[in-house]
Image 1 (spheres, rainbow, N blue to C red):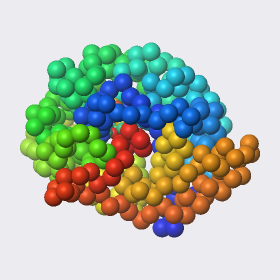
Image 2: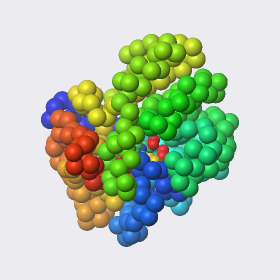
Image 3: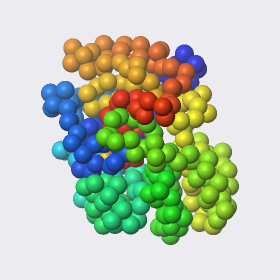
Length: 330
Ligand code: SAM
Ligand code: SF4
């Protein structure tokens, strides 16, 4: 699939649920209202949509959420999609998780064909972890990460940079990733979704500043490594591990953008930072063969915008996009 700007779209991210067993302060409010079940695609429907994308040339699939591992029977989705890895039509099946359920799911994920997981960890301090995630327990996440490692999964740690919250800890997390053999990406906090209060504005910490700070203590060597997304990767010379910086508020990655995002209701967002979307659930449910669905996907790709309009509006103090990150999975 080639979009109007000549970009090859070969990466699909799929949010399989909007629910989560955490309530991270920058992501959700404590009293979230979740979608009714009838609006959510079944696991069979999710498999059908993913398979249609794979037929159209998608090579990399990332399962996310909400928390993907809280969806009942989600392993059966991974098991099913594993057939595309074995046929060679799909190069990679991965997931982004908060790690709380990895303890029990790491082995089955590996057996389904998953080889890498991204786990979100913003702090290694138990009390701070509880404060950031509201409902999470660090210990359980660390157990999950250990299980993933034991199962043979490569682990990448995602850390949201929060000024005044984990700024004193990034060195320790980089060190820990070095000890454990994990790559890491640091994410700039984004203005998405109403989460109650406006703490994200106070916590906004531009990654240019984070990087300048880290460079006082670490040797960060630029690399050409590129995942087609908003991450720019360096190698930390002292640990030998990759360290990526995700700065979605800058425009410098859009010309390489290779991805689209599907929500658990079958809505396709062609850009994380735009409102425009395509409904794939209607064509999916209209017929048992995939012709209408494939036509709808092609039409959506032909509308993929050139770039996004993210902006933290400090005057009105409102999020630039009303949609929560848990809808599109980041
Ligand atoms: N629940 C899983 C997790 O936490 O990894 C997957 C979904 S979560 C929405 C995906 C990523 O988005 C996480 O790394 C999370 O830290 C990040 N995230 C959520 N809200 C964000 C925001 N407002 N700004 C930046 N990153 C955010
Ligand atoms: Fe849940 Fe992930 Fe959002 Fe945290 S960032 S509330 S773990 S979806």
